[in-house]
Image (tube, rainbow over all chains, first blue to last red; front, top):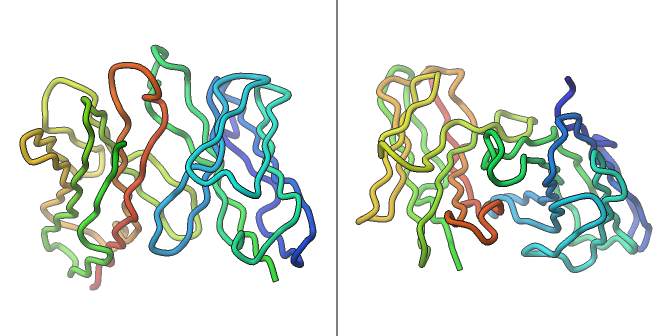
Length: 116
Length: 116
């Protein structure tokens, strides 16, 4: 049982390049989330999904897109990277409301992205 | 909208000393409260949570937190810390009772450094 995994662990991009971060979970969770973590800012929600085929905007969605084509995967895309997107990105997942431990989010190990 | 304030960005203590990490929240509805811990270069792990019932909740490694509704606080305490408790601690809140209660709002974090 791997839990939540993220690919890649590190990436350096030049301004204007694009990339996709992959999050996968093997716990059959309904809900998945993408956060960014910046020094002194805590974690801020970028986008989230409450089920396969559905996505919604979080607190800081600009410059990012997401897709949830399969229940176990949640992709975060940067179409044209900017230095302001230099951050550590965390994916998380949780059960739907009413299920066991439905308020606990399980986090991946993070992706450190640098945009130069 | 809900918000979380962690009053101290850094807390240095000596090993075996007691520690308190402060967390206050604001919300117009009932809330669920969480403390997450992040060890260096890792993702976040749930430390403890308050959903309902007893206002004092405990973790398996000796931390406890008390929900105080009148003071809108959820401070984290440990009577005697170890070197291995060195980590960043995040307080988080979600709105209970339905709606978007699966989304978490995080505080900015408190870095606990335990010195020998």
